[in-house]
Length: 286
Image 1 (cartoon, helix red, strand yellow):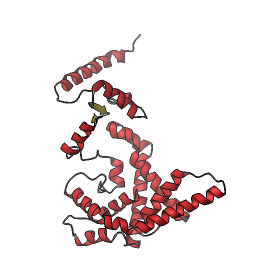
Image 2 (cartoon, rainbow, N blue to C red):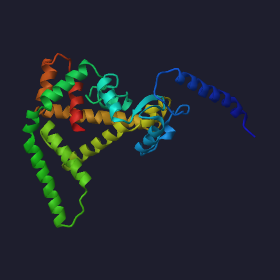
Image 3 (tube, rainbow, N blue to C red):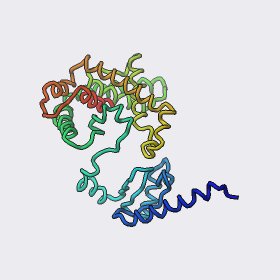
Image 4 (cartoon, helix red, strand yellow):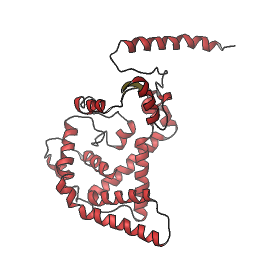
């Protein structure tokens, strides 16, 4: 026997499917597999995302429309389609989806990697491309890259003499962190107790930026992040990262001279506050 609630909900679900069929047929959008209420097409995906997307593309073509929860998504799986999106219609797709975690961790989306397209983003790009990441500036730090690479090779050599296993993933992560920190902050943060805390903080920072994905797609479940402590972790890590970067600003004005000059003199014509400086520093730290 069916429960009475089933007979109450079934007409509503049926009406929802009919409404989606009618509304989708009236829109000029790519073909789409039928999704489910609330989760959309999430049930058709897996951890190896490229496999189900390839399978769906074989059936629905190089352009298809999917709903990741409540997030409408166009999936493109051809070179011509990718060129159309990234060149012809690049401004339409230039903004990244909003994330509450990124908003807290990256100073209200002031980091160049997540800032919405506009005058502020264009000025940040200009500072990074023409000043911070210019060919001359990159070459100026060549000796740092060579020194740190030499240190890494020496560690590998010592490990081989002792027949000690080498975790190359950890080696390259450490190399990248040391090069970036010496170039951007004027010193390494990978050694001693301070270095250990820095690595743990950076690891948690990156996990939180990439976490909470279900709530991104199904905003009505945002209460779960409060219950499971995710929001509290984001607040704590955001506070600790801010304290670390604030200390770097006060301690060093090496690689940061360019940023601080723009911050103090408003040289580019766009208003840069202290949070903007730390947000850009966060880019180089990750």
